[in-house]
Image 1 (cartoon, rainbow, N blue to C red):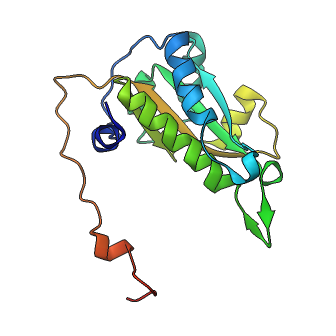
Image 2 (tube, rainbow, N blue to C red):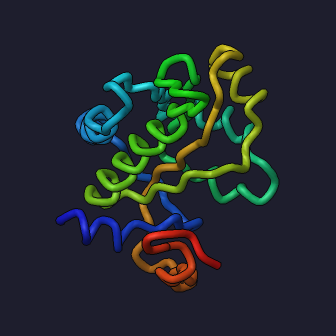
Length: 175
């Protein structure tokens, strides 16, 4: 698969089935993040992966109401970072941007491998800290749900995307 195909195929489905995520698969996903660009190559991203079924069961408590579909995750990636680990240039803090680049590359690599990935905002950082010991000075940015999309699953078609004219500007900003 090429990058364009991975971009077009990637979807944040909410119907998933379990799949074994092997060490080899995980290493490919991690390598994709590792190679992401960052300000002065500081690589501020941090990932905590959970694959163990008993641990995944404990993580069900961290999801907000409405994210019960994530209970079927084969793996979770807790994404976290802190501003001190990356560039701060005249009040511009790059850690969230750079971590987002690494996550984007992970999602595309996983998509190419036939995995479903779904980053979510519906979780409790406090409950995650209680289960993981991630220090308070790190911002927990997202949780990525990994699994396999069932081939016979009925899901809505891709949600509408903005038109170029709604988010792109030429030469200067205009409404």
